Image 1 (cartoon, rainbow, N blue to C red):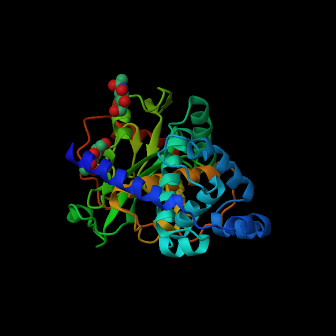
Image 2: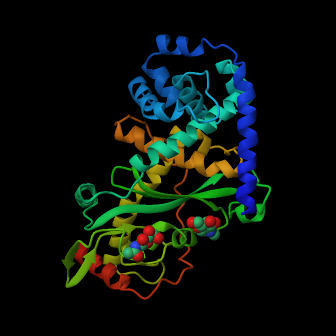
Image 3: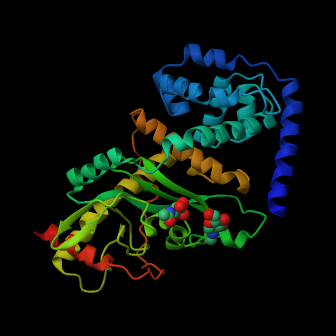
Length: 366
Ligand SMILES: *[C@@H]1O[C@H](CO)[C@@H](O)[C@H](O)[C@H]1NC(C)=O
Ligand SMILES: *[C@@H]1O[C@H](CO)[C@@H](O)[C@H](O)[C@H]1NC(C)=O
């Protein structure tokens, strides 16, 4: 398509630019200084991870970042390039400032960041953000059961807005209800706040329900390939594996949401909603931690719209990478705990979601 061609042309121009700049790199002793003199706290503050995790990350990305046929060979070490990228994601500092810090050119800082973000997505996404295996699912379901006494729960879903600069094309689509331009990150997390599915880049004006319906998660949920058919029979109703969502989502056999507020809820329904909201906090806390670590998502992400999704996705991957390595992180107040109380604007296909929710509610009341 024309759009794709334009994208390719832009990329090509970019690569030419990178190439000319890399012919004469400015020398940098920055990295040598960092790796010998920084202590634990410095590493955590600046790269959001321990030195061990950082070096392991470099090893994961090294084959891709040193490949010959990428048009250019960077004279900068893999460690330095990964450091530049993480610095940018962690601080959202302007490239001009980063380039001064690292002793490189501004466009080099920008190219390097793009290159490493791309490498993270290509190399690590299949490893770090994927539907859980059956063995992993068993652990997740047990985790939700142990912690929140909810049966058959495989995750919690929500959407969050990432602020961006007004894009040149169709800016109105990106203008959200909170009067800023944004794209939406839809995430499903497990009981340990790790993302196992993300959908990135829908324009900010789109509702959470529509983002869901347009995502591959939804197609898989509806065609029955999302989860294995494990059933638990409660109060004579077969309860399938499901995820938990807020009121903005449609009620589906594989997505359970609260009873609508304000319709004269019974006490068991009130209790059920409360229990659900407690378990759903895993996803809100995951978003909070994601943004706390990678502050380019907390502030306005000033990357070009064509690259914003890659950055968001890379941050989710790095979040999982850090959580998998059991990196400690002190949570701040979740920046994104505003619940959507508006009921879903999507009419779900005919299903037995109500029956499942009623059975779960009755089960919790026993
Ligand atoms: C729906 O998804 C497709 C690709 O999966 C994407 O191109 C399109 O922009 C999405 N639509 C909306 C409204 O986000
Ligand atoms: C189910 O949907 C997913 C996502 O669209 C697709 O990749 C898969 O082939 C579908 N499977 C079946 C059995 O229809």
